[in-house]
Image (cartoon, rainbow, N blue to C red; front, side):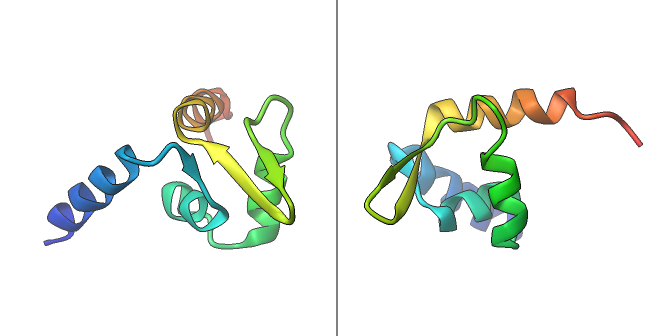
Length: 75
């Protein structure tokens, strides 16, 4: 059942152009806003602010997150 739920969520996200903070929390599994802020203030993290809300381009953000994750030290 979780696999089906995951696939449905992936389909929903594939249609989005931008993620919100809530989307970013779901995609990364990081639930703390403070921890998430530390991540998206990393150099080169793709983001922009409209008024008081952050938006993250899906393709660029996904690519950045994967590259960042691979660069993290193991252990």
